[in-house]
Image (cartoon, rainbow over all chains, first blue to last red; front, top):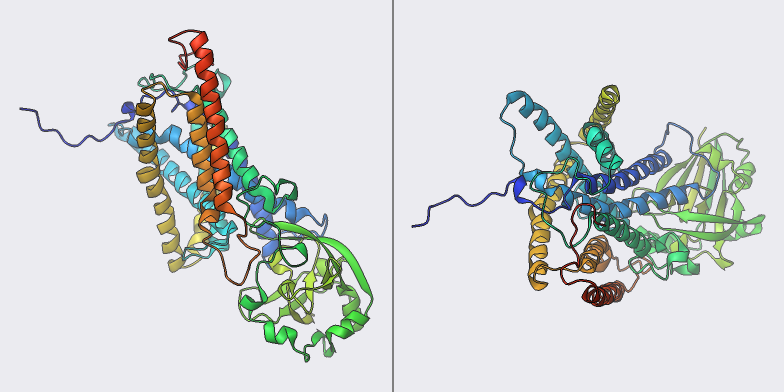
Amino acid sequence: MPQLRPPPVPDESDFTSRLRSPAVAARVGVWLGICFAIAFITGLISHEAYVHHPFIAFPTRPVWLYRVTQGLHVTTGTAAIPLLLVKLWTVFPKLFSRPPKKVGLLLVESLERGSIAVLVASSIFQLASGLLNSSQWYPWGFDFRATHYAMAWVAIGALIVHIAVKLPVIRDVLGADIDAGLHDRESMAAAAPISRRGLVRSAFLASGVAVLATAGSTVPLLRRVSVFEIRTGAGPAGIPINTSAKHAGVIPAALSDSYRLTIAYGGRELSFSRQDLEQLRQRTHDLPIACVEGWSASGTWTGVRLRDLLDLVGAPAGHDVRVVSMQTRGAFGTTVLPNQFVDDPLTLLALGLHGEKLALDHGYPCRLIAPDRPGVFQTKWVRKLEVIA
Amino acid sequence: MTAIRAVLIAAGAAAGAFGISLLLGLGQRNLIATVEWLAGGVVLHDGIVGPAVIAAAFVVGRVFRGRVPAAVIVGGIVLATVTVVAIPVLGRFGQRPDNTTLLDGSYGVGWLVFAGLTLLLVLALVVRGRRTSGRADEGGGHGTGPGRR
């Protein structure tokens, strides 16, 4: 009669593939770490561009800075997904390692495993929430921007702890041949259909393919191979939109004959119809529109220089401006434009794009377009500019 | 090296603590929703993705009777991980009726082209590998003993 046994719980030693080795994990991990570092730094830059009172005043030059940093942020996050999946595969047996019996060792190991749990959970969280946000899919109950920012600190902190804990192993396995077998488990002996080098290269290949397949939303040259780009680049006047006029609830007000733009400074107020604005001196600048979701596009905008308008109410330089939109929905109906953007000669109140009258979805009758600003701050359907004293 | 490790651990712990303090400052509802997603990600990976990959590897091993060509593994890794990246666009979950400039690609066709090209490449490499190993030696093929590339 067969002996009754409890259902088998796998042990670390049951995983016999040669591929699940620290030599593989460290090599994939180096590039994963580089992706995380770039995503973290570019994320901090984006955070600085968003907050009302940043640590450092956000620069207006180069005009493409935010386009590049945010494109990099989303691209490195995308590149990290295949790398993380392969990395987690190589270390999967660790999940089943038996805890040590000595109390002291148990404590150290508990701390280490705790930090790994935080690292894995926060890494999956960051990459998944970032990926979903880039496609404007928000199936969660948390505030994305604030939570993604908070968890970025948790993930990068856990990563630094992980590198510190593993430093001797990392040095050993990176300093030796990938097949040298340093720090391999004894059970790691089974032949695999692919070499360790082959697995590392497959991870890099998958990462590269993921980037090529998605980056067309921000790198127009990649459009043809970017089969999974969030936006093909189509839109009114050849530029996509994020918030439509319908969604913003502006259609009757934006098309109304009684539309007036109000400019206020101190006690002075001036109001302009769209025709009045067209009578003022028009300027044309090439400026990118770059959104936090990673997509961007370059546009040729025509309109009135913001500084010229403010001069009409006698507002001196060096003041921030509150920009009020007609939009009734969304968190960015009223924004504050910092003074360096207010006084920049490239900042326009745009009336046209690519030689056409500004489309309703692009912000007709007029919209703000400033150099090096996140897209959500390029306020559309502007109804009031108020110089903050 | 001990000093470097100690500094790194202190710096990492400080960064993590800062992040957690930010998270706590976002309120209890936000915290609960975040913890659900943190735990959900780990459960999804360790409970479903990890075992599913093991099961898939077992099936592939059976299909090829223990002699799986390397190209099949490479193709599988690329196809599976890139498909994970493409889930949000393939499902068009963020699509909105009022914005036709968002999620406006032919993603299903794109995926079929991507998967088809990957399969074709794998097939070509497998056929080429069979021919070469047939000419070379019977037992060689895809062994990966220490020292082999």
